[in-house]
Length: 198
Image 1 (spheres, one colour):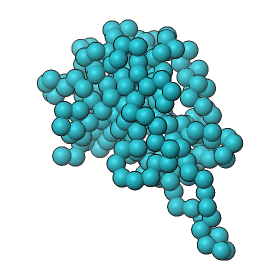
Image 2: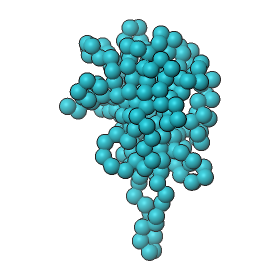
Image 3: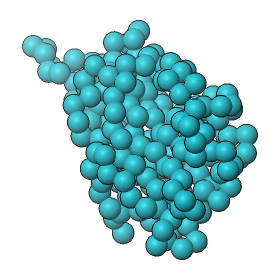
Image 4: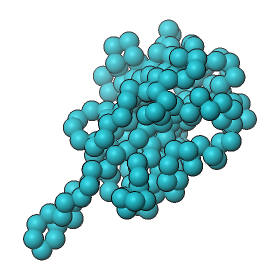
């Protein structure tokens, strides 16, 4: 069953109307764009290694603990409520390239928002940006049965950007919502992107 397709800036309730929803999978996917065709055929380009990360933020939007930055070298939050599936180096193949599992009912009370971002590994040295990526998306699935709840296709032109703030799960009263953001950033590394939340 296909989920609801969101547009940039749209917000939607996740848990309201989904009784018992506690474990969700945030899936991110992308494909390398077709290489430019030169005089002697297609130019070979290096694999683009996109890395998904999650930042667990306080109510005032701050990253208060180093361990609340979840990425390929810190795959699990200290509270075990957010777990990264591991690094996909190429983005080739169908389906999600990387996944982050979130146990909404176990997220600590001091975490108000979980921001999901993607950046290109070693983007500056490799001279790569999100203009070289196509078919990027973020989606949220119910971990029980893998039913897709929502999907947001990142279809803007992100040429020149080396990171994308894709979307965020956030508390609203006793419920969890999702906001489709789709904002580009020039941060060359996840640590640089995280600095804006410190």
